[in-house]
Length: 128
Image (cartoon, rainbow, N blue to C red; front, side):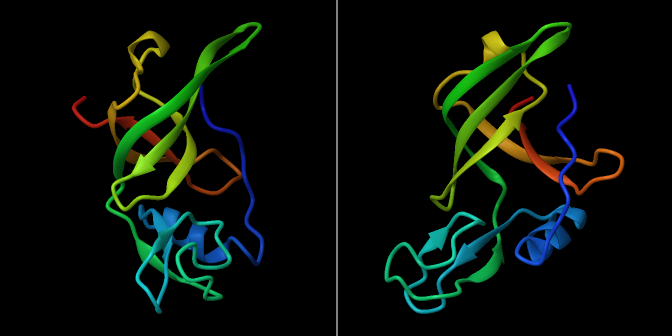
């Protein structure tokens, strides 16, 4: 099942510029070098304001997941993925049956581009 349509605003513009290029951007502190999730407004390590955008490797491991069942539609797997850089992201898992998803599963970012919306990061099995 495709991801939903998301629209950018001023706070998300740079992130979605990255996804349009096929790049997953996360935050990195210019002061201490700590990485943070894209929505971070301050550094989780030293509380410095306005961490910079930096490309992530786009690889990580499934930490937790849930299977969402909707009447008349195939199930959707939504997971928390720990990126290799450390931050956790919530995203849809595609390319794997719900029963094949497991904790510690290696995943790689991909991007889905629903018509009328921004490119959205999803994760797929890294070895598939």
